[in-house]
Length: 331
Ligand SMILES: [Zn+2]
Image 1 (cartoon, helix red, strand yellow):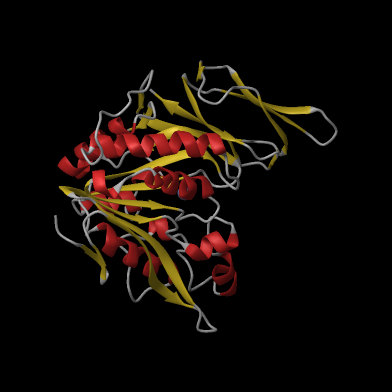
Image 2: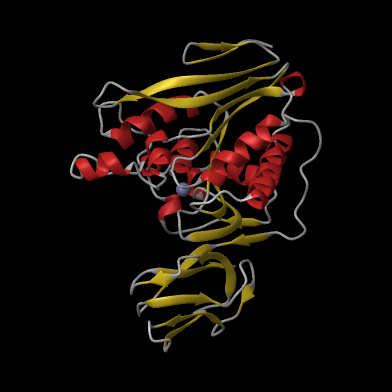
C-alpha cells in the first residue's frame, strides 16, 4: 500500500490522521479551517470521500460519520477514507443551515449562500463557491463519495438515501448500488426537485465520475443518539459494500424505492399537529396533520393528496401559509 497524500498531508498505510485544511480568511485574519479525518488502510481498495455538516444545523450528520469511523481500524481497512465532518464550519458556528453572519452582512455578494448548491464551485467566487471548490478538489481525488445530511431545523426524515438522476450514466448506477449497501430501507430515485438539480454536491460529483448520493437522517438542530447510532451503522454497511471493511452489509427488513417526493404546504397559518407516524404508509385522503388557530379552532385538515410513504415530518410547532407541513415519498 502507498501513502495517502491529500493537500500535502501524508498518511502512511495503517494510520489515521486528524488535520486541518485552510479554506477561508475572515476580516480579522482568522482562518477558517476544514477539519479532515484521513484514514489509510493496509490493503488496496477504493478511496472514499465522506462529507457531513455542509449545513450548520445538521449535527447528527457530523456525529454519525465520526462515530462510524471511530470503529474503523486502519490495520483492517482496504483502501482509504477522506472525511470532512464539517463541510461548512461558518454555518456550524451559526448553528444554522447557512453561514448567516456573512450572508446578513453582504446579502448581494453572498448569494448563493448555500455551498451544497454551488458545486463544482469557484475559487474566485463568494464564500459558498470557494467552499464548494475546495471540497470538490477533495471529492474528485476519490473513487466514491457520500454526502451526509440531517434535514434542516424543523424537519425529520426517515433514514433515506437520495440518488442523483440516472441520466448521469454508469456513475449514477454505481451510486444506486452504494445506496443499496447503505441499507437504510428507504431509497429515493427522484425525477424532480432540488436533490437532483445541477450544482448539488452529489450530482456534480457523480457527473465528474465519482459516484455519490445524499444520505438524510433524523432531525435538524439537535443531536439524537438513536439517529447517530442508526446512521453510523449505515455508513459501516457502505464500507462493507465497497469491500473496504470485512463482511457483508446488513440488509434492511424492508426496502422502499420511491420515484419522487411530494411536499405538502399549509394554506392557513397556525399551530401544527401531526397525526401520522413518520415512515407510515398513507392512503389518499388520509389525515396527515391539522392546523389550529391561536383560539384553538381547527382551520385546516391536511390530507394525503396521493398514496405514499410519510418520509419527512415538519417538527415546527407553528406554520404560516405556504410552509411545508409534510412530505410523502411516492412509490
Ligand atoms: Zn442538509
